[in-house]
Each structure stands twice: as structure tokens, then as C-alpha cells.
Length: 303
Length: 174
Image (cartoon, rainbow over all chains, first blue to last red; front, side):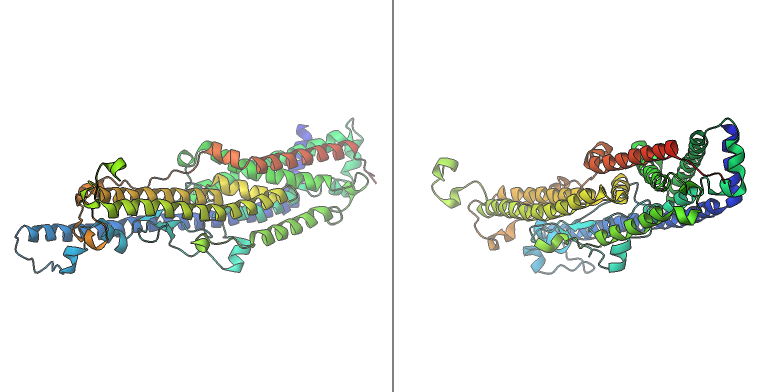
């Protein structure tokens, strides 16, 4: 078994297709994770801006209310802080005044996994006004209406795994026995006391282990570059995310290997035996994109 | 009024009538708004159910959904935050209305008369900021149980197919 694995390893390095696609996946993941980290930083800054703005306005009202109280107690008017007569009737001392002119905002802070997946955060407002007179929380940002963005989604780590990762899986799944037959090594191997099933199963196992290792490495890279700490994200969430990616890869691998007829397609060329995989790889994303682009009614549609 | 508050006239009440009206109005309007948004969220839920059913055929939908949910950026998480924001607003406004209702101006009936109503910093001190925590991973798993099941099923089917193909495979070596 160790010899077969070593032989498989040498063959994959000779082919280089999987390595090139692994490099493409790593580059795309690096880019997406860095963009995700930047986007999350902007999000965090927006939350801080909301808090700062709110505190500044409420402090302004507090200062003016104190000035009115001081004047009512017989103090001398401060020329640097002129008080309009109307402010005594309906002004900063009344709770409804502050809420009417500067309603508090509640903003969803970025969740720990935000750098990994934009998800629906570009469709549904993340900030709400606690409006007093409107009878409802008011979404403050318009959701994205760009058809392109709605169809494809934002460029994030999840999109990279969705679109690029299957290419690596297909590359790993291709050419299980074809080149062995072409090189004449298949006949040599089967002349040994080794069944075809055992030989193929060992090759499948070797490639599956390689896929698991590559997936774990790329997911760890995405976590590291995206600034996702395991402590804040939670080990269970991280495992769920990684398991979903791995399951996605496994089912592509399963489709790839099971889509070939038993005899003699395993020994056909890769282009001839990967028809079903290519159909899936084209049809599934297109169908899903059409689903994702279906319009979701905006939250304030019924307000 | 006599039975509830033990008084004969409005101006003898120990509560602010205008404030009580605001309390009732907010309570009624809040219920209407919540019902409207619940209907809207039900539409979201129906869309999600369609997606869920299709994920049995297209597992990448399940993968997207699970990854979004694990990252806490899915629709359910955002709607949970919207609900929390609305609950916070309701409690905030009702706190102010209760303060106005207890305002010591017996029998006050109109908004114009509320001009003398003021509040100090102690009122704002009662309002804490909204502290929202993402849903637990257990809730995520429960919510995504269908998609997780679909993924597991597809992986098992794929592995079984691979095992079957490997077992039945025969190759012309020349």
C-alpha cells in the first residue's frame, strides 16, 4: 500500500494539473480572505462611527439641557451657548426631542465569521433606527440591488470554495487509471498479486487523504488571513465550516469517480470520462445562481 | 374609572392620561407592525423552504447555506437581529411612555399640555444599549439540520458509488 501511495504521489507531481489548480485555489483564497478582513474592518469602523456620532449628539443635548436648567435657576446667559426660547418648551429636556432629532441606532456588529462569508449581509440592512414617531425600527441602508452582485454574490472565501474548489477536486479525481494504462504500468501492476479493486481503492484513498490535507490547509489559511480567531469564532463553528467544505469536496470526488462506467471507461482518456462531472460543474452553479438572484422583498416593504 | 382608579373626574387621576394613551397606542401599533413583519418573514421562510427542497438535488445550495450559517451571516441571523432591534425599540419607547404616564400632572390630556414635561439623566440611565449575541451553534445546527442531512446523504451516496464502482471495475489493460 505504501508503494502504491508513493507511486500515486509521484504520478500527481508529474501531471502538475492538480498542483496548478491548488495554487490557483490558494491565490484566490488569499485574495478573498484579505478582502473579507478589509470588509469586516470597515464594518467594525461603521459600528464605531454610529456610536461616536450618537454619543456626540446626546452629549450636545445634555449640555443644552443643563444650560436651560441653569437659566431657569436665575443664571446669566452664556453667549457661547445661545438657547432659543422654543427649546424651553420642547427641547433637550424632553425625551421625545432627542429621539425625534437623533434616534438611537442599533447596528449589528460583525460576527466573527464575517470575513469568510458575506452571506446575506449585503441584502438585508444591518442598522436600524430606534425611531420614536415611526412606530417601527427603520432600516438605515438600502440593500444591494445590483443584479450582478445578487446573482454571483460578493467575492468571499465561501464563493472561492464554491467555484474554484471543485476544479481542484475534479483534477484530483481525473486520470485514476488512464495514464497507467497508457504508460503500460497498469499491466505491470496487475501482474503482481494485487487485485484491480485493491489497487484502485488505494489510489482513491491516497487522493482522498491529499484532498483532506489540502482542504484543511486552505481553510486554515483563510482563517489566518481573514483574521478569524478560533476563540471568538468557536471551534464548533470552525469545524462546521470546514466539514461543509470537505463534504462538498467529497461529493464532487464521489460524483467524479462514480460517473465513469465500469468497463472500460476507467481506462479512457480524462476528457472522455469526465462528461458527467463537467455537466454537474456547469449545471449546478448556473441553477443555483438563478435561485440566488430571485428577488427577496425588502424589509421595509410592508412598513 | 371609579372602579379602577377610585376617582370621579379625569383631573383627579394620579396618572397622566396622555402618557397612558401613548402606552396603549404604542402597544397596539407595535402588535400590528410585528404581525406585518411576521408575514414578511414568513415569505422569507417560504423562499428558504423552496431552497431547502432543491438542495436535495443541488447540494451546493446546502453547502452555501451551511457555510453562511456557520459564519452567522445568513438571513435567519439577520432577521433575529431585526427582531431583537424591534424588541429593544418597543421596550425603549414604552419606558419613556411609562415615565410620561407617571408624570405628576393629573388629568393631562393632550400633547400640547405635555410641554412642561421634562426628564433628567436618570431616565436615560435606565436605558441600556442593545447587546446582541449571535445565535448559538446548537441553534445553527438545528436550523441547518436539513442541509446537513442532505450533505451527509450525498457524501454517503458518493462514497457508496465509489465503493461500488471500485469493486465492479474491470479494465482492459491493453
